Length: 97
Image (cartoon, rainbow, N blue to C red; front, top):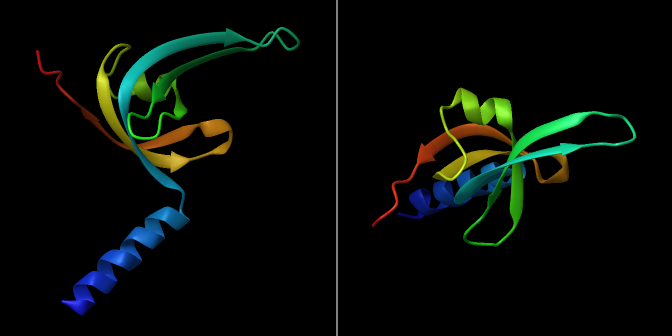
């Protein structure tokens, strides 16, 4: 039993050290332009239901996974600068109606 608890604790610390996050929320599409450079940034935002923090995911990654704006999803990924997430796993969550 102690070995099992030690294993779980170690595994949790390893994933934390690598900067992995699991976020659950609704995808919202965003398009913004940097007026100085003229560069257009196409991304999706997701507000984590647990913490209330917004994260951003590249639109190409989301579209490659077959997801779209307005869907409730769970994303596990690696944190990068400016609250960006690089996707490792995704799961669509059906809304209860």
